[in-house]
Length: 103
Image (cartoon, rainbow, N blue to C red; front, side, top):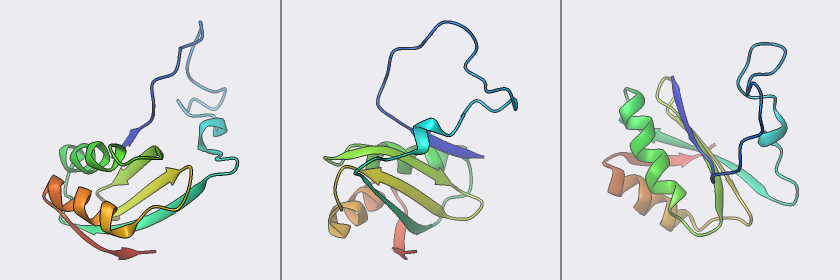
């Protein structure tokens, strides 16, 4: 289970799923001119944990998407520019978890 947050965009008509049955066709994962950073977070055990971490990190200026995965403890953050790790650490702490490092 993984929680992902992205800015709201208008939905097109028709199905959101790709021909492979996935709800993500990969196009939204491409960050042209952006930065993608993967962090290791300890303490996440479920979807609620993923959502809490994703929500807090999404509030950081410049973040365009966050995907948290409790099974691996990894949080993938896409942003317009490199983020201050102190800000990410504070957001994870606010959610009640611990940032253990960058992967």
